[in-house]
Structures are given as structure tokens and as C-alpha cells.
Image (cartoon, rainbow, N blue to C red; front, top):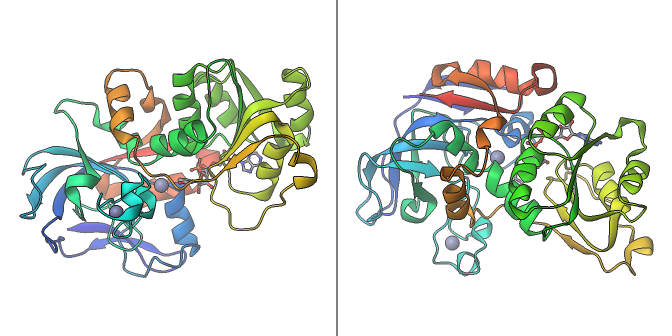
Length: 345
Ligand SMILES: NC(=O)c1ccc[n+]([C@@H]2O[C@H](COP(=O)([O-])OP(=O)(O)OC[C@H]3O[C@@H](n4cnc5c(N)ncnc54)[C@H](O)[C@@H]3O)[C@@H](O)[C@H]2O)c1
Ligand SMILES: [Zn+2]
Ligand SMILES: [Zn+2]
């Protein structure tokens, strides 16, 4: 079969590789019908993720059809249509029992990282019974791919950890796919203001289409003053960081109101200054999280009921055999006005 293979920093190829086979009784082999590319895949390609070795098939998002199941998998059979979660969960270890699948001692984020991923014709899914989700035949597969990673990430790390409530003022810093997924799922809780902050005017314009009530281009360094002007000098109830650089986490600290929440989503490569001299008395809650995908069943029902416009996130379409081209486009996201690529087998 063909797969998108990491060949060391800066190098990738669409090449032949043996079709995966069942290794453990709890495995399933899934034939990929849809996949996509994540910003994390670009980080891997830069060599930023040392756990990914040369020869690894990339990808941790996708939809497919069950090809074969191990003897311990009772939830699925050949021909079933499934959503693949970016997080593998055994549901038996201490972390899984706490609902913290991201730290599953036998899984977690392994797809396209420690084991071969979904940007291929077939993928082996460990703990298939608890890491795959049944999807009805006839459901919109393109929209459902957004449930593998970005919708649960925005919802769990941003909206739930930020404790967004009806009437809240919310600022989301970063209007990439993750920030926009946070914007979509945040509206399930009816906040009064959703202020989107980015440095890219095109993405801010898209954010308006996704339901942002205000947008701020922070390039001029005036974002704090503008958020204060929009909130009668108080700041926001919830500040969500969806970029992953020190400047944006500091911005969140500057715009959160007393009693508010700062919910970090961004993956940080450097330490960030914590302004405790200002925040110690402000009753704020700061949270961090790696997506657990525990809300996937709920988001799946919400999406199938037409209450999450996940398709808005798709800007480009490719065939599986065009994955190399899809990477070129996604790697030049600002110029190509790219959010999510949909890649169909
Ligand atoms: N916590 C988790 O489990 C988890 C899961 C997936 C992704 N992430 C992380 O979420 C973050 C966002 O992911 P994405 O795919 O949307 O990334 P992205 O790179 O597509 O989007 C980031 C956005 O931030 C904007 N930006 C950059 N610098 C800025 C600045 N100084 N001020 C304001 N805006 C700025 C960019 O213009 C871009 O629109 C990344 O750090 C990613 O690694 C975290
Ligand atoms: Zn991802
Ligand atoms: Zn586990």
C-alpha cells in the first residue's frame, strides 16, 4: 500500500509500505476513506517531535471502514464505518479510568507518532473497541474528520477547561483550525461576546463567518487596550490561548478579568513568564490540557444533529494519492488561505 512517510527533518515521501497486519487481539485494521493534515504533522516534519522516527507513517486523524478485527474486538466488524480518534485509549489503566485518555499508559497520542498513522491506505488501530467510534452510513464523512482531533481539542482544552458559561465574554487568541474549532464549540454555551485575536486578517475574516462577534488584529501591539475597550475596562471572563508562543499566553494574562479563566491549548516550546505579581490577587484559574477525546461521543451526536458547522473548516480537497501536494498547500497556509485539507481515498 501507499503511505506518507517521514524521512527525517524536512523530508517526506509518498511510498510503498507493507499493509499493516493485526498484532494484538484488541487491534483492528481500518481502510482509510478520509484523512487530513494537522499543524502537529508540520512540527514533526521540522524535526520538533523527537519521538517520531524515520520511516513512520504520519497522520492521527481520519475516517475509514473496518477491514479486519482481532479476536478481542467485539464492538466492530468488517465493513463498519468508523471515526478514528487521535488518542488511543485502553480504558483499563489509571489514567483512562480518570477520563484522561491522553495519558493512557498503553496508548495516548501514539498514531503517527510512536506507531504508523492514518495518512495511508490502511492503518492498524490498537484498542480498537475503545479508540474508534461507530458512524452511521450516509453521514457526511468530510465533516466528521474534524472530530478526530481539532473539535475535541478546542472544546476540551479551550471551552470546557475555560468553563465558558452563557453570557460570558470570551477571547480566543489564535484563529487557526484549533482556535476556530474552539470558536465553533464555544457557541454551544451561548457566550455574549466571542472576540477573536490573530495577526492574519484573512483568518479573522473567516472567524467572523464562524460566529466571532469581534475581531482584533494584534499586529500593532494594541490588543490589550482594544479588549479593555470592548469589555468596559474589565477584561474577559475567559481567555483561551490557541497559538503556543510566549506573547499570546502573556496577552491572555493581560486581558483576563478578576475571577476569570485562562485556558491554554497551544503547544509551547519555550517557558512563558507567569505574571504572578499581577495575578496573585485576581482569583484566576489557569488550565492546561492535552486533548483526551472524552467528549467525542457528545460532539459526534451534536455534529450529526446539524448543530456544529464543522465543514466550514475545510478549505481544500485532495485525493489520497495527492498527499504530497496537500502538504505543500498546508505548509503555506497563510498564502493559500488554508485551514483544513480534506483528503479522500
Ligand atoms: N493541547 C492540545 O491537545 C493540542 C492539540 C492540537 C493542537 N494544539 C496546539 O494548538 C495550537 C494551534 O493549532 P493550529 O493548528 O490552529 O495552529 P496554526 O498555526 O494553524 O494557527 C495559529 C494561529 O495563530 C496566529 N498567530 C501566530 N502568532 C500570533 C501572535 N503573536 N498573536 C496572535 N496570533 C498569532 C497565526 O496567524 C495562526 O492563525 C498549536 O500550538 C498546536 O500545536 C494543542
Ligand atoms: Zn493534531
Ligand atoms: Zn489507558
